[in-house]
Image (cartoon, rainbow, N blue to C red; front, side, top):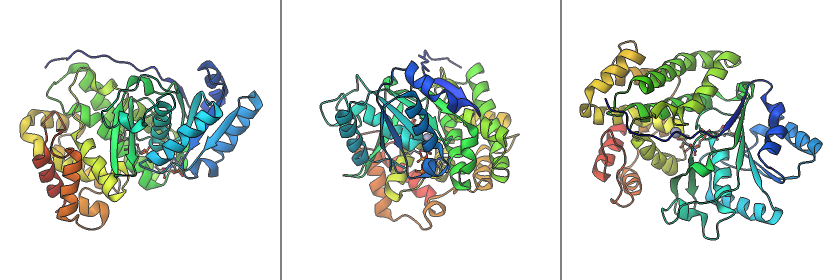
Length: 384
Ligand code: NZQ
Ligand code: ZN
């Protein structure tokens, strides 16, 4: 047991609940927005009336804005570049992301790109570190990525087909508006992908060799709550309390709280980003297809961690079997063939391991450090 030193920084102001959207213009003004880019996805926010409501609120307050829609899941660098040009032309000084992780990450990346003279991909290619960014605010419509409070931005470069992340405190959103009622319209599959991602953001921190009193208790409470609410909300999608619980858990799971003092892992996340790049799958579903094999592969590093997880979260069920049953209970795949409807070819597996290890030079994970050879083994285990 050893609490490592940590720096906990969560500057995001949260407005949560049924009336939270009414605070939008107040929050925009408070955070210095004079000229706003409204950035959104493929149409869900238009259909629900949310965008219409936001446009009206900004007009009524006299806040000028322009718009850029069309963000796709696993957001693309090409649209980010359009956004950077648009912001420069229009003199945008604040980006409002209306949507989920993909829209928020696209917004964060546009924010990095506007003041930067070079190619914004430099930040994802470890060629440069961001020192400035146009600020971002969020109206969240899907609890999953935790990007509304996180320091992370994940973008797919549609040229070479590379999905990469960039971490910096300066991209953490200034505010996030979270109305659980907005999540009533989520399809079950998206709800389940979100639940998986939320659990994984805490599991990636919990599977650490540091066994910590308070941090573990917070993590276990979050995991138990989401695993209890998940299957229930799929049967009862208009249940406000369940939706609210999951939505708040999504933010807490990835704002750093559930890993304070622990050495986080994030190996499964790195492995998954190659699945979503190669097969265009939803991030949450890709995580479910990998986690149980990652867990089998690393278990011997510290079996007591798995025992604690089993006892404190899964009512004594075996850690790996318990999670496999849970993922199935919410309709998630637990192998690559279940995820993509066929086995991946050996060439696809090798390409994913090559990309994930950046040509063999890069390792992932901490609970057990994984190089290219170990990545190949885990992909192959999941491909049976
Ligand atoms: O595009 P629209 O039409 O809005 O539809 C979206 C999209 O198809 C739909 N949706 C969102 N809200 C809805 C809704 N449909 C009906 N009703 C609503 N209220 O849901 C679909 C998925 O949206 P997306 O934003 O892609 O999902 P998510 O929030 O899971 O974000 C996934 C992305 O976030 C990255 C992932 O890699 C992936 O690219 N991540 C970002 C992280 C971060 N920045 O901290 C951490 C995560 O680990 C993750 O890697
Ligand atoms: Zn994730």
